[in-house]
Image (tube, rainbow, N blue to C red; front, side):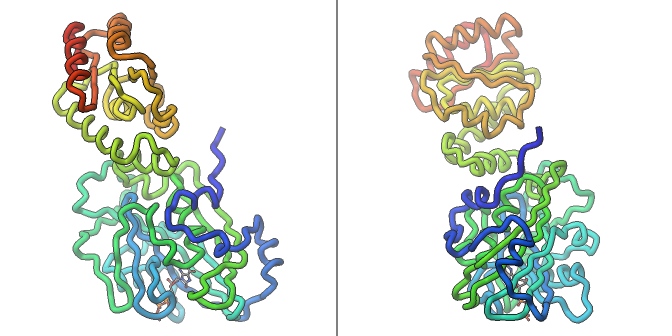
Length: 385
Ligand SMILES: Nc1nc2c([nH]c(=O)n2[C@H]2C[C@H](O)[C@@H](COP(=O)(O)OP(=O)(O)OP(=O)(O)O)O2)c(=O)[nH]1
């Protein structure tokens, strides 16, 4: 059964600087209900472009120095010039404000919706054409999967601002400065960034009087279309390491912590460099706790099964909850038992179905006694450790 798309309010809980609910107004479930509540019919309409720029799980935001939104962070864009098409305007504004060049073809494919803004104290409706551009930085040699035939490769040193705006990379987009951005960003931008699927948005936001100082929405309605067959642009370009990290964060998993995840990732890489993992079948992670190391080895090697031997029950199966779809048809088990009895039992059982050179015992911790015991037992059974 296809998974239901996430709810707007659930997505924003994952971001640390999200604005308080009082500033985000009432959420409507249909445009009709939104229009009825707002009552005001705008008399004029102005068109703008807005381009969200990401690179994996980083986002490029601009700090505005003048005009609308001065002193706040926003994505890039501006007014459409007389008779100008929204795609042409988006290419022009992105280049003017960041130096990034995107072809018309790519910008056309990057259009993801429209945002409509109305105000209690202004009869003009702002109609913002929304684009989502995911760039590849050519100092990031780690990009693993690039599905688009025409990638936007940017030399990060060429990114520059102008007198109106200064671009700045936010390394983890769950940390974007939403408290210093337009209130609607806490609603739609969080959804866009948190979604692992490609989304198109039609957003309607009605603001209270008072402009950016008050920055408060009275009513909103966001119509979201999720393309369940298509990964979001950031998922396509994220390295596997970032995708795994991102998944832990987006599911609010605290065990493994970011530090433990980094350690497990680094440890797995060292193990893979020093051992012939091509024909690996079984991984035994001794005192492996939450099981991140075992799972990373399952995901990144040919191993088909892994078992975590640890008397402590750590993380309550968090790793499987977060990453199960990264190792489909592979098995991750937990054996809650001490090393002395659990490891030999697992080794004996594994050796019944596979050869010793296809079994790997790993242990990532600082206890000399535990390490000695692990190596001694592994040597006794003739497996890699
Ligand atoms: N994220 C977000 N962006 C908004 C909101 N409202 C709004 O106009 N924008 C965007 C659309 C445009 O990209 C930008 C406003 O355009 P601008 O006033 O900077 O236009 P411009 O660059 O042509 O300005 P200028 O040269 O005439 O000073 O802000 C909003 O509520 N949220």
